[in-house]
Image 1 (cartoon, rainbow over the protein chains, first blue to last red):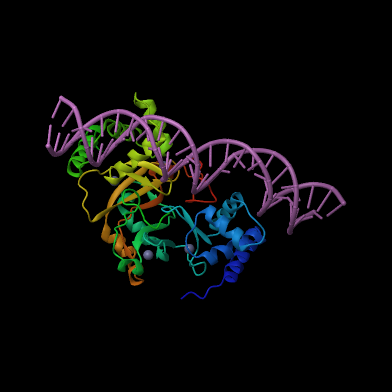
Image 2 (cartoon, chains in turn cyan, green, orange, blue):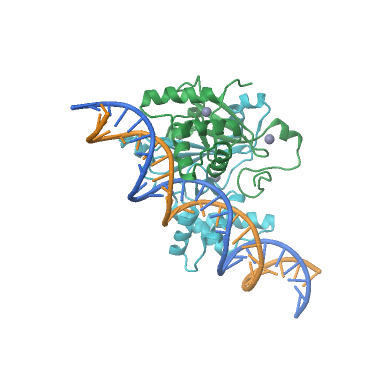
Length: 170
Length: 170
DNA sequence: CAGTGTAATGTTATACTATATCATTAGTTT
DNA sequence: AAACTAATGATATAGTATAACATTACACTG
Ligand SMILES: [Zn+2]
Ligand SMILES: [Zn+2]
Ligand SMILES: [Zn+2]
Ligand SMILES: [Zn+2]
């Protein structure tokens, strides 16, 4: 159980901004609140709608992209490439540099679990690779999964990408 | 050194099609040839251009998407989500079901290395996850990396997504 | 071989995602 | 106050992907 509050995110962001000379504007704060509220991963345009539903002052998608980029650059937001959606970081504090985020994405209900794993584990993965001259550089990992709830409802297989489409994915 | 030929891909595809009742049409063959020729990861629209440059009978993007979907469904093509491009499979033969592809993507020159890793390694990664009720389901893994060549030219850091953009990425 | 059914593609339109560019505003610094 | 810079507003456009329906090509039946 996470006892974090939207205000906690805002405070964290404020601290980061102070260090870097950037500013935590009202729009950025509001976006953090929206992201915290919606919980599930959303596209930039969905977040634009959410923002305009939840916040009084309207925003346009262009600004949403800029703000998502900013929040991702300070690692309070993650972009999940495999589903092309954005989500607030589940572990904004206590991260060490030698960890990378691992996302478990329920292919049925899109619930996300974010856990931190040792970067070493990644290097271990790419051991073959290093022998071929590649070195790993700060990735996140996204795994197609099934959450507990959806494991019970075992009607459909849901492969990751092509063919068997994800039924819950509009 | 890979001694594979475009014809090998076509033969593999033909075999799969026979088993599944689908057909390896001329267009699909041509697309395999194009993918084999270009080597590097390309967007669907880039592949459309490549196809029309290399093949005499023109094709439209809609068809390219359909064919990429088909070829991905029989695992002769991979969709790299993190860069949103498609690439021909480097290991179309000798794959076992308990392996998943790991892609090392050079963030500087986009050269790709594909290696197969034991799915067990993935399960190990998501061990935390399983304790939370998630089970892993057939993912591929994409890692930002630096190839040997680009390690020499160490001018720029190239983070994965936001902020420091990838300079070679039009 | 004609008739029928299905897989695949052609064609057009449209939805969705993301960035470029320039103008304007709002803080910060001197 | 003036100058500078970060951030946003506003508009346009690029880039990615799918929907929907028509047509064609192939396999299968009789
Ligand atoms: Zn995180
Ligand atoms: Zn679920
Ligand atoms: Zn492969
Ligand atoms: Zn490289």
